[in-house]
Length: 298
Image 1: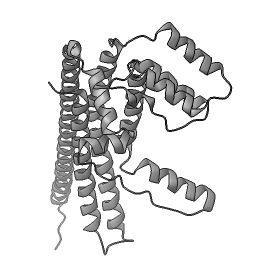
Image 2: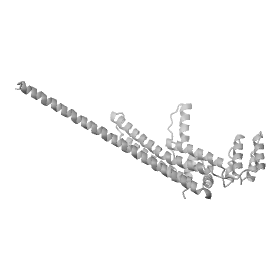
Image 3: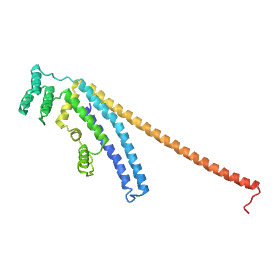
Image 4: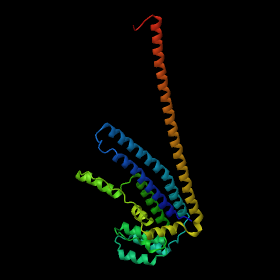
């Protein structure tokens, strides 16, 4: 069985490679125009190359949006059927007391987390309380080999957002933010850096979503329990079907575009031939008139 995180990584790797090919073709076209900068031909050809690049990237994003959305929807479907251990009344009373308490020490939260490692939802609540109280870097969910449904949903939401940003720009988000800051606050035009290419599943989840390999393992375990294998399998199958439909639509659009171009070019040729025929007829009629009038060039 293919894990949904494996399916996500596989499709993201494909997208990364295909985008690099499209940008590489564009770069080669621009490099071939070196020495002609400033000329009319350079302007026309560089604009055409940019349009072709943008069209190809748009088609690529459309195709892979289907893959990614089906995978994320499959994850949420599995998460919605998850069964996690419910907190005990004592644990809930303790959580409520912490939420009402004005000052909470990290040592308090650490101690409670250690006693609740078998209840992921409590660990998730403790992390939220820590953030509310200004305590950072807790990550109590990692104390358990399971994650709560709410945590899994939050990660899926973050992953979906990260994938959209990944598809929309080959520049890293951090460098784009830094470049914008330099421009707005210092008037300096800075070029955002390209995203480093990930080569492994661990690099992918860490670079795009900030998830460690341990967290991904927890997530995998949460969304692929033995009883839910059929649900996950259907989600992967749905992703494949969505991809096939997107690819079929893209080919149909390309075929229609080519047919349209052929029709336009055929019409232009016909118009040109009709125009030439009309010119020839005019010339013949002119000669005939001169002949009838007895006109002569001599």
